[in-house]
Amino acid sequence: MIEVKDLTKKFAEQTAVDHVSFVVNKGEILGFLGPNGAGKTTTMRILTGFLPATSGTAQVAGFDVFNDSLEVRKRIGYLPENPPLYLDMTVTAYLEFVARIKNVPAEMRNARVEEVLAKTNITDKRHELIKRLSRGYKQRVGLAQALVHDPEVIILDEPTVGLDPKQIIEVRHLIKGLAGSHTIILSTHILPEVSMTCDRVVIINRGRIAAIDTPANLTTQLKGGQNVRLEVGADQNAVCAAIRELPGVRRVTGEPAGGNGRVVVTVEASPGQDVRSQIASKVVGKGWPLFELRGVNLSLEEIFLELTTEDSEHADASPN
Amino acid sequence: MKGMYAVYRKEMGHYFVSPVAYIIVAVFLILTAYFFNRLTVLIIQESFQASIEEAQFGGGQAFDVPSLVMRNFFGVLSTLLLFLTPMLTMSVYAEERRRGTMELLMTSPVTDLEIVLGKFFASLTLLVIMLLPTAIGFAYMLRHAEPTAPWRVLGSEYLGVLLLGAALLALGSFFSSLTENQLIAAMLSFGAILLLWVLDFGSQAGSSAWASGLEYLSVFRHYDDFTRGVIDTSNVIFYLSFIFLGVFLTIRSVDSMRWRRA
Image 1 (cartoon, rainbow over the protein chains, first blue to last red):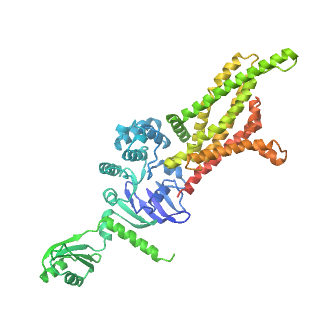
Image 2 (cartoon, rainbow over the protein chains, first blue to last red):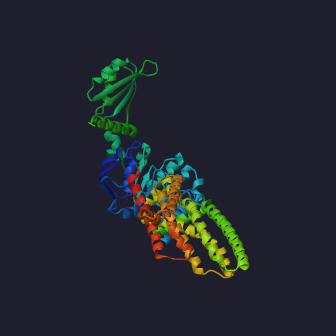
Image 3 (tube, chains in turn orange, cyan):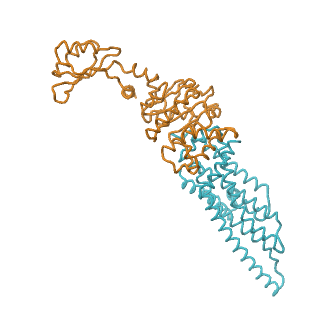
């Protein structure tokens, strides 16, 4: 449905998007994840035809975003970072206007407006002026605007910003409900959002793609080895030294646990190694009392940090 | 052109939902009513004076009161447009850029031409709405004056003011598309219009090619013939090309937003 190849966008001084390629299949939800200024918004703006790319191509529903911009725009619903609202209009008047410029046929306009009002749960505010609405409601009007012409492709730039927790859950449900019949790209810097709503994730940093995969694969594949945390009633240095001897252990760090003579040790294993049983038998073999031993999964947050910092290290190391 | 109509409707809604349009129209109508009244009274007094002198000394010329009122009134009207059109156009693009709604328009299936024309015709409609009530006074005057002035003179004057206004609106819209700040947009268009006015003043002294070139560029000079009831094709073409240029530059400016935005 969406095909992006070698997309590059340079502004005067910096490269905002650097040879980005990815594909989004029909009915899929793709999450864009990255720190602020990573190039998420720029990529989305290129896809919606708001910005031209410096080089590379992007196709939406088989149409080139630059050469067939109008065809692409007919098929896209777009919620920019700041919802593009006319504050002097009422919610209904605004949505009718958007339906009009998005070429919704006159006889379907009312029905479509009603539907998105209900979907985004703003029917009760329909006659209010947009300027009187709270941040959360404005965000939902923005979302309604992106859906009003029932587009094939929906691009949402940080759709849950400014919403309270209950509304965030509602909007996530709404987005999940749209998948299947719509192809969705959403950007966020909130990690749980990605693992909850998206089928696949693109991690983007400094304009480059750091990883593309499903949230589940990212967690297992990229976490390297499993981390193990254990609590032992023995001398810190002795425990660390003993565990360090074990095969498959990459790094060991210890710290005293709250003055009761115990020590908390964090073990980082090499990729693909499960070192838990070896650690257990080692500790028990030494006769040390073992209070706790558990595997710690890297959260998406840590993976994200790892990927994005690793990437910047590479960038700094390279000449220029 | 469906997109253009949608933009046009939105703009009209915007003008009349906010108090801006009402205030501008009200101020305009109060001022024009005042000028109409003063001009009529003054010119009638003068014509009395003239007829008294005529009776005393003989000769003299018959006073054509309606034509004089109309000519002077439309002269004043062009000055009012100088001040009012920048206010009509200052927010047209600047506000959309500031609020980010330009992004909505530019990612919708409407062409830049449709956006620009929709907005231009909306501001032109507002101008017509402003001008229409001024015709009431003239209609009354032309019905009751003796001798009366021909209606076509009035028609030519309204055509002139419409063309002049449209040209100034096209210019103002262009300046509004250059900035996110309404005040800057208003100042730029006011300055530009004033300059086009001053071009006319300066050129009256000289007679070189340079001076006559400047004179030709003055938007107000081409307006004079209309106030005298003369519809000269060259003047009409001047205004139409001025409007065309303004609309064209605005389209280029809207297009360039895609390239400039960081």
